Length: 346
Ligand code: AMP
Ligand code: MG
Image (cartoon, rainbow, N blue to C red; front, side, top):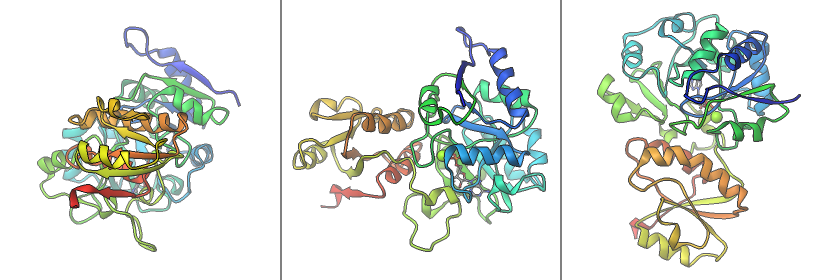
């Protein structure tokens, strides 16, 4: 299969309707298309078409027990996806949609098991990216879409990276520029007694609490599941976001980090904050120390860059756990296989 990349925006950021029509036509006949969203690029198919959804799992090599997020272009479209819309969902949608928040609710009978991976619930999001919204609206169906990477690789934040992973596997990728947020959506479930964050993202826990009051954070966000423990969000149990290099997060001041790295092998790489490159012979920066949104925006590209540079051993600066930093840490600790050295404890 030839994989085509089409520009989805014109020079002055207007929608390229010809490209959007092409994508929508492919989606309507059960094909899979790579589309831009503000979080990361998605691999989209008609959420009501079981065969089309099966193609997503095949293209990614995704385990069948990892459910997909269903994307809508207007709030009312949620009604055919879920069995009821509680007040909390309306509040969240008012505050954060369109945007990087996924809401989990009991599913309707229209959601195929392939989408929910057999769970009684479904994950729903309304993206803010103009191209994603236009494609959903034009296709006329909700789109199931996981991140557009091969399963286990860092999520793609531009069309070229989608092409690197999906070349020959899907017919079309729409190029809508770089993803603004850079990490996947925040996932919150409303199926628990107290709403619970299963995955941190661009909408922060602090922002969710301001709207809902009590919000819990699932243990799997920060910690590795123990053997045999069941994940509330199946995606959290997989080794994820992983480059080929062995990564260790080193928590501590810049001075402590520099001293630690100086004692390691001379060919080791560091994943540092912007501006710190000058202290290390092999360094890839992932955003300024004081900007969690910049770190989120840069992280996955930086991980892929380390692979491209042939890095085998990587020491990473530790992000803060506040705000969007929690999402950055959640992805990085998985990329590091939960390997963390804490110099602040000494
Ligand atoms: P991705 O599509 O790659 O961004 O991953 C979607 C994430 O949402 C994964 O971590 C899934 O496990 C999670 N997810 C999707 N649907 C559900 C659901 N019904 N219940 C719990 N987690 C879900
Ligand atoms: Mg993914």
